[in-house]
Each structure stands twice: as structure tokens, then as C-alpha cells.
Amino acid sequence: MCGIVAYIGGKAAQSYLLEGLKRLEYRGYDSAGLAVLEGGKLNVVKAVGRVANLEDKIEDMGGFRGTIGIAHTRWATHGGVTEFNAHPHTDDRNGIAIIHNGIIENYAALKTYLEEKGHKFQSQTDTEVLAMLIGELYAPQEGVDLEAAVQAALREVTGAYAIAVICEKEPDVLVVARKGSPLMVGVGAGEYVVASDASAIVSHTTQAFVLDDYNVVKITRTGFRTSTIHNVPVTSKIMQLELELQEIELGGFSHFMQKEIFEQPKALSNCIRGRLNMDEGRIHLGGVGNFSKELSKIKNIVLTAQGTALHAAMIGEYLFEDLAKVSSVAEYASEFRYRNPIVEENTLVIAVSQSGETADTLAALQEAKERGALALGVVNVVGSSIARETDAGVYLRVGPEIGVASTKAFTGQVAVLSMLAMYMGRKRFMSADQCRDLMKDMERVPGLIERICEQDARIKKITEKYTHRENWLFLGRGYNYPTALEGALKLKEISYIHAEGMPAAEMKHGPIALINDGMPAVFIANRGRQYEKVMSNIQEVRSRGGHVIAVATEGDKEITKYAEDVMYIPDIPECLSPMLAVVPLQLMAYHAAVLRGHDVDKPRNLAKSVTVE
Ligand code: F6R
Image 1 (cartoon, rainbow, N blue to C red):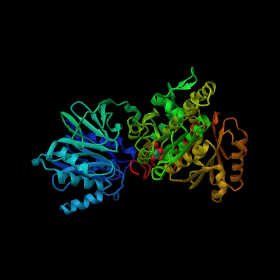
Image 2 (cartoon, helix red, strand yellow; image 1 turned 90 degrees about the vertical axis):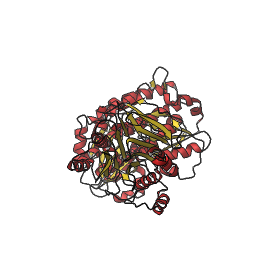
Image 3 (tube, rainbow, N blue to C red; image 1 turned 45 degrees about the vertical axis):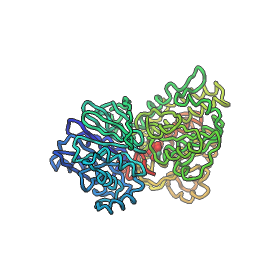
Image 4 (cartoon, helix red, strand yellow; image 1 turned 90 degrees about the horizontal axis):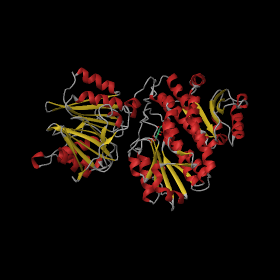
């Protein structure tokens, strides 16, 4: 969603800010803006659309040389996509500028209060309210400097924020703060780069610290001081960023999504490395080791997530019941958090999230914890809010995912959930030999995905035949019912083709009415317990004129009699097959979007990390 970059140091801030904004483009946004202090004066520039538009505007103005500044990409929540609503926002008295991620929930009450005090608002945003509030409280003559004014303002707000603030009257001070929305400070030589995401920092420094909730950091060119909003000093621990620059660059691929699909063999190798203990026939998961006893007593599992991560969680539901014999349910976090969920004794809640910042998933996790559940995270981004909120967890280790459409995180999530299910299975009914057999298959997965990726040109050709169709169906059963949902989601989010995924058996209960001549119906029809049943469903579609595209097991000749097109995956135990079956669907969605002329990495209206509910 929105992205934050801020700079203070000895060099011109502008290039740091623009480069940072470009690195954050992948998160999704609809407008951008920047403020640089130069000669004691605030220069604010905003543009609707791409960062390139902002860059052009700044160039036309002759550029800025100031060495302190803030910049932002906005994904509209309060107010439409206009320059007025874009950040930075300023107060009307002191030359204070602010950028903000998150939502100020009590902004309406604060706005009324500030209007009564005579402040005039220009935008419809909650952020401008915060700018005015800081301005209202700013009183340097009375000892309330920028840092103190920010602390005081944040004591008045409810909601979520990551902010960066500068002020004409304090040209050597940058104040940043966080609650609920991610923010980190990169510590360079005589300079600091603040960002909502490490990708905007790593090209300058690999030393950084993450703000905790309610932290306020005052940064000057010579140092920084962290405190709480109540001005209690806090020690920020500087860490080494693991992110490599090459991981966030295209490296010869046309799009990040394409790169990440092809990266899956390597990503999954990293994900499983060191976690499969063949000698002992058991799974080693360092992140949950301290909770081994509690995990053996678990009676119910609630997996909670949104979007693609929910599809992985749904596969988890099958895995935990099959391999660990624990009753499991996967739920939309957005629904779970607002129900009145019954969390019985010995319940485990597993929050699945690539970013670790999804607002609904975080809130569902907190709700479950409050009701006594043990909380585990299956998260990619190290140190993210969900990772920090859980009692224990397993990181995906698939590397940064830049493509808005999640691909390698999905296979990573399924891999981790498979290992977790085996880990818990071994504590119950699974023998060392059973576990060993499954681990051997698990080890094959990266190489098998590589083999599927070799079919890329064929998959593109198949896709070409159907890209003009506006309605597609994705159907699967058992473990590959969630895979069908994921195939449909991938297609719709980047190609804007309407696609529905469902259990193949459900089709007869209504959706079959949609099938008309030539309608593409993608079936996940690999060999498994329900193969024959899927074949019957295929016949039902064919006899109504639908065109069947099947994902089938290598060597299956029978399927060619019923499907117009077949994409093959290698044979593997059914419980691991979603990690293979999803790959042709990812490639199909990718090609469909490119063939239809869409910007795959910047799909309309989408944000990479959804930090508002
Ligand atoms: C789809 C996609 C989204 C995310 C969802 C949850 O390709 O990426 O559906 O899966 O927004 O995000 P995380 O996993 O970051 O919690």
C-alpha cells in the first residue's frame, strides 16, 4: 500500500527520495509526492499517477538541493485520487510537512476540534488532520519542539500510523514514528534513510532498526534518539538487513512476477533447507522448538489469512487433518476478527501472511490470542508486525516478493504448512518412516517445479488461444480445490479477466449455467483420490460446449481424450501436489496479462501489502 521514504544527511535528498519511491512502486499506489527543505523553506511537489510524473514535475522546476526531505506513494483510502489528497500534507502555520501510512480513526473529531481553532483544511484526508494537530501543539518558545509536538499529537490519535515529519523552523530535524504500520530507519555514514520497506534502504546501507509501536525517533545529521509517545527513552537495536540488492532487481526478466515464478525452485530449496532431518525422520523447525510441548497438546487449529495466503491456509486445513489428525479450519481473517469466535482450550491459531502486515490478519491473530489461543506465524517478511505479535513461527525464507501477484510466497506458505503438519504428525500418529517418505518427496519439489517451468513456451501458446475470453472457470477437488481458487485469483488480478474458482462438484449446483460454447474451464486433474470424479466433471463441462484445459499428471494419456489442452505436472503424493499444480496456473495468468497488454507488476487498484482493513 502506501510507501514512505525520508532522508536526512549531507547529500541532496531528492535523489534518495525518488529512488526510494521507485523501489516502493511495487506496493501499489495512485499518486506520489515529496517535500524538501531548502534554505529554510519547504518545497512540496505532488503528482497523480506514476512516480515518473512526479520526477518530470520536479525536473521542470529545476530540482532541489536540500539535504532533508520526505516522500510518499499514496493508495487512496480517505478522499479521491487527487493532488490535494496526495502526501505530504502541511499545517497552515509553521511549515510542518508530514507523510503518513495507516488510518487515523478519530480524524473526524480531531478535525472538528481543529476547525474550531481556526485551521483551514485543503484535503479530505486524515493525514492533513495530523499535520494540523502537530502544528497546533507546536510551541518552540514553550519548549514544545517538533519531537514533543509529534509525541503530544500521537497521544491524541487512535488508529494506525507510520509517519515522517519535517518543519521549516527546525531544518536539521526529522521526526518519525510508528504504530501498527511498518517503519524502519537505515543508518548510513552521516546519513539516515527512513522507509516503510527495506527495499528502499538497502542500496544505501544494510544497518537499520525497526520502530516498535508507539516509538518516536528524532533524527539529526549526527545521531538519533528513540522514545515513546510519552517521552520515555527507548533503545533501538540496529540489525543487519539480509536483503540483497539483486533480490529486488529484475535481473533479465521482464517482470517481477515472472522472475518470482521462475525463482520458485531456488526459493523452495531455501525454505526447506535444514528443516528435513532424514536421519531422525522428523522435521526441524527452530522457530517453534520452544513450544513443542504445547503443540503436542493442540486439539484445534484455526488458520487465518486473506487472499492468496488464505488459499495456502485452506491447503493447510487438509494437511493438518491428514498428516497430524488435528481438526482444522481456514478462515478469512476479516471475518474471524468480527465474529464472536469460540476458541476452545488447546487451540492453535496460525496466521499466514507474506508481508506480515495485513491489517485483518494481524487483528484476527490478536483476537485469537486474547481468547487464549497459542499463536503461530507463517510469514515471509522477517520482523514484520505479525511475526512480532505471534508466540512462535516459521519464516518462509523465499526472499522478498516484489510482484503484486503472490507466487513464490504461496508455494513457500504451502511448503511451510506441509512441514508444520508433518512436525505435528510426528508428535501424534506419523511414524519416522512415513515422515521420511514424505520428506523425500518434499525434497524433490524444487526440481519438479523447474521441470514445469520448462513448459513455459507451451503454456504461453495454450494461453494465447483463450485470452480473448472474458469468463473462465477453475475447478479442482480436495487439496487442489484451493489451488483452483488461487488459479482464478491470479488470472483476475493481473489480466482483469473474470474468473471463478470452486470445488469441481459445486459446479452442478448453479455455476454450470454459465458454461457456453468455448468457455475456458481449467481443471486440476492430477492423479489422486478423486481423479475419476474430476473426469466426470470434465465430461459435464465438455458436453455443454466448454473448452477444458487440464493440469494433469505426466503420463496420463486418458486425459487427452477429454481436454482440449493439457499442462503436465510430475507425479507426487497428493498432499504435496498443490505446490506443483499451481505453477502452470501462475504462468497462464502471467501470459494472459502480458498478452492483453497489462502492466503485470502494477495491476490496477491493487496494493502489495494491505495495511488497512
Ligand atoms: C494475491 C495477493 C493477495 C495477498 C493478500 C494477503 O496475489 O498477493 O491476495 O495474498 O493481500 O497478503 P499477505 O500474504 O501479505 O498477508
